[in-house]
Image (cartoon, rainbow, N blue to C red; front, top):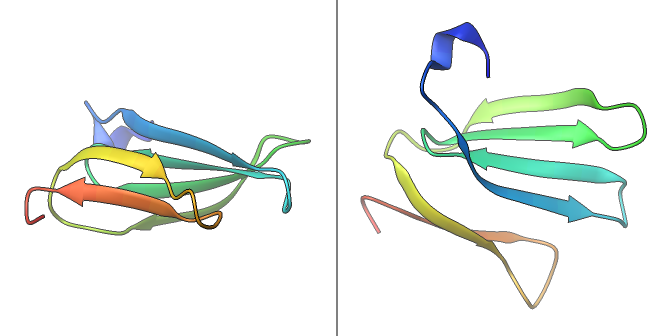
Length: 71
């Protein structure tokens, strides 16, 4: 993890074969998107200010469902 988010850790790693990427969502609410074949970070964005307790892949599409402190 980058130095500005010490103590953060992944709660979800989801591979999306259709696009050749891996989504990583962390406890502190960061979304990282990596390209699989070269392990290049494509995108990094904070998606919530609240701590994420659990995350899972959506069964109906290639999306993700996250539960944070706010619900």
